[in-house]
Image (cartoon, rainbow, N blue to C red; front, side, top):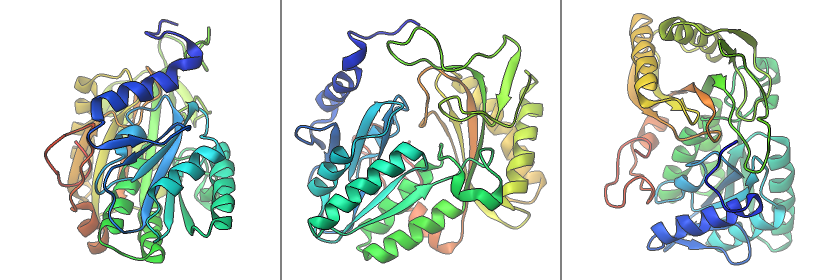
Length: 338
């Protein structure tokens, strides 16, 4: 598997170094661990996210004003260590408590929970909101078992906006959990990504095969089938998404079509076109749409569709300014970071 790297064991450290050279005016590296924090954090609830490397620009690109205050970074497709999470949380804590927001994976849950216990000994209050938006990974009665995928983007945005308003830890946690509960995603894989240093991909698909609902790391999806035209594929994914989310006529949503790494913007725009057509046909109001590759799996082929069902409170927070140095060094934009 071709990779532009020096040494497989050094990819995370060297990527962080490269990121810091580019954005050192806005960010600070946490000493001795793979963590990055914002500079000049005001006195407020701190938001910490994180997870495995290999999903760039998630999670690095979501540290910024109105987003996360710090990120704990793990090895490729691996959870950050408890001491990494602990040190990042201590570095951003302003005495108002720390909210952890991250995807629902066993390793991340274990290590963030261990960090929370260690922080409790240091009298730093923490709360956790797990993002479990992948409707294909478990039925609704087992929603707590669902994986987190591209929905992290919307949930981090809401958490950061609530925090910037100066709300208490309890209120920031409440509205972030509300956003997580109203975020729904489904994806499709067309080809595997690869792990630096590994000789084989984590899964194999035939030249004409796709897998509906496959997870970011190659976790099993709903079914394998033959490649089909974009509109047909989008319709099939949307059918499942509507059933699981219960989003219907009269509802208002923010929509995000996410590329998994190698799928081109040309293809993603074709998918987005069909998503918009179907939502209009169903009488669902599109408040905002975004098409980008925020949550990737190296060079995996495929895409996901994410809905955030909005009410007035979530809409206000969604509209709040957000600024990530990775996306735009000057402009604060509505909605997500673009």
